[in-house]
Length: 413
Image 1 (cartoon, rainbow, N blue to C red):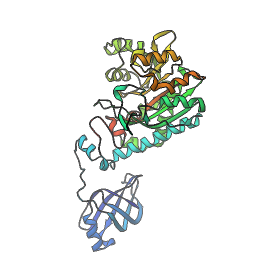
Image 2 (cartoon, rainbow, N blue to C red):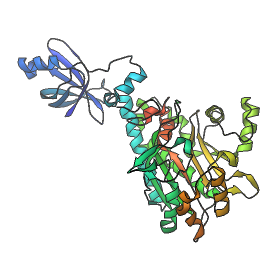
Image 3 (cartoon, helix red, strand yellow):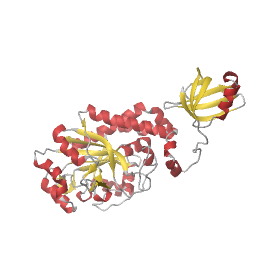
């Protein structure tokens, strides 16, 4: 067996090491009488994170967490590790500074395994439901979600931006492939230091054609149910390592999500949470957390005021002050994980809203063409994969939901 030393202890004649690989940790017993004097001297010098190749006999051991241990007949030191810099009681900031080493911890290994399952489940859901995978450019000439969160780059003398979302280009592709999805990096220059924001994150996005607002919501609910179900089936050991109460995830599969309008959300916040929010203000983290603690399934808040949402969201025909947009809020205070909408099909309304935002219409000519030539009802959403992982694993901070987080204050390692 090949692996890394998690812990080690012993005496003058016996050495016990906890050997770790990607799958588990197993105890290995090294006896001086079996490996010999010289080899045992080497064993006595090994430290945490030495990499070893072990040769021995696997025996049943009821006291072992995995039910077995290895009695070593011989071993080979593959890589030394002298004074590994992570022990006990280090600060979160220090562990971020040495993230390249902290990834080896049982906690981070468990999270990364869940993350891998989440990515696979997203692909699985969309492909099984007739979606084609499509990628949009990372370098963009126009904004989508707001100029204040754009990362500018010098593209051979031309000012461009890192993509906030794939959406504008995706809306051009739907007229060829119809139902499409992606999982791609997105970048937002948000000057936020909260536990829920990253400047670079992975975005699962989809667009569907010949669809209305209800169809968009149904796909989002179906996707989350499928991902949670898959994680519960495939990551029992990892969730146990993370001390995640899986009973709090089971209602996600069995029960319909709670749906309410923005107006209804304001009423519930006032009556049940003693929180008053002025109409027209977006829900903040504080309000989202309060709402999600009232229910054991995600909340889908719909019909937000138009003034707080993006220019491409369709106006409600019954009330033009609100849009057919929605946010999915995860339970237990984890907040928004999906934002979506039916897309505005009226080119005049799109142009008016762009002008109100001070945008140059020429930058959006390709996008406006999608409304000129055979447009159809369509919609879509974006899901923050790290936010989904944070909720499923019940993490305190989104920085633990990605291997190497990037935030306003952290750009290394």
